[in-house]
Image (cartoon, helix red, strand yellow):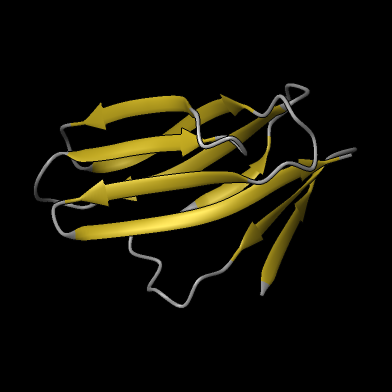
Length: 103
């Protein structure tokens, strides 16, 4: 099952997995060409790790987040139509979303 979010000329397709949307992730095309905006919420608890892997499984974004709150990050997607993976991990909870940016 796939969500498609569209701005003026790009669209992002995001896989929905059956896991609860624990981190309230939203991925949408950025106003910058070739970037996506990733919005998410880190609940109270342990520090969380946020990373994005490209289609070659290389880490293209990493951040450790110490505090709860709502976050927004802009991440480059250099290869169109390639599948990227967002992984957010906090303690024993891990959520993964696959997405691709298409013109």
